[in-house]
Length: 463
Image 1: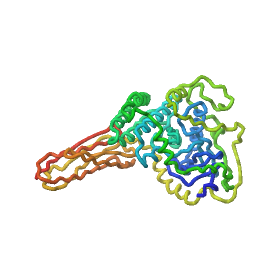
Image 2: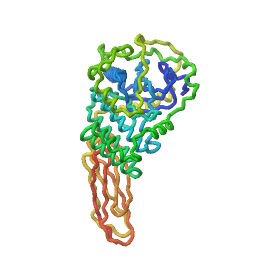
Image 3: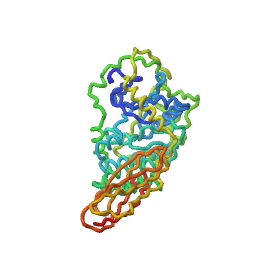
């Protein structure tokens, strides 16, 4: 893809793309030369009845929240339609995500605490405003060049499913995030790992506010007692998908393309009525913007203001002209918006995305059971113990580990679950040698999703 020629509604598209359940995300350059993002919705998702309207209402709600003073969200610049395609354009880069950073190297404990603190703060502010995120995981936590943690895709997963996630789902997603970070520090920073595990349990049982307070009050468990963005910012800058040269913003606009009629879907609700906003008085309404007299501070604004770190940056979208016309039609030269290869990727992932958009429950482990053969193991032999993990049919990832009582080896593993299966086998092969008569015990522990579960079984080795 040619970065200088391919674009949509003034946003230039780069070659860095990745698939999610919503469609194809692309790193982009905004019309004023800053890093931004573009999401081309999967046509089989956005084309479902009512999905486009729900997406538009969700984005408009977010815009009013951000303009009302809430930080912590990736600001959306526009949602446009070009023929049968629907694009979401952001005023802030949407990469790297926390998932990107974790794929490269472990995040430092101070940075992990910063991510957990800031995401909890944002979720609490959303809940105070009467809305939820609905899809909190490492792929929706964006790390800025300053090390701030911003949430992307707020409400979009719910919008395409036609549902509203409860606050408990956000708390469970945050707890899973905390447990995932804790797992990376088990060996290198066990006290920090313990703190994150406790915070995860607190979020699940008592809520996000006590969990966030715990991170601050028990920061002595972190190396140096610090909650800091510094190393996180360096990691984010090192993982940026593309470097923007100084002259990039001065490049001429992209060559005209045949995008058909480009229509902004914001400001003119498809249903003919404004989106239903559930936050209290003081947050700007549909007409909020430049020149609006600020009303008394809302609970959501107060939570964000009081909870944010002194170094945090509130990212606000650029003020939009109130006189902008709803429809902008420009005939462009015969050229596709994206290369044929990109569309092949989108269509190849459409079926996978479709199957992910089910009503499967959030993954939970119902029980685990470990069985060992009853026979005695003879000299220099091997035996296979079988662990069975039973789930509720949710889709996701199970992380587990085996421990042996006769040595310090820890065998770690993971497996992906599917909606059509609830029972999974987790085998362990154990080889023993030498002259001995001992009782060997293997313990299986499911680390996530929580709460942690364990079971064990024993056999006799006689030689």
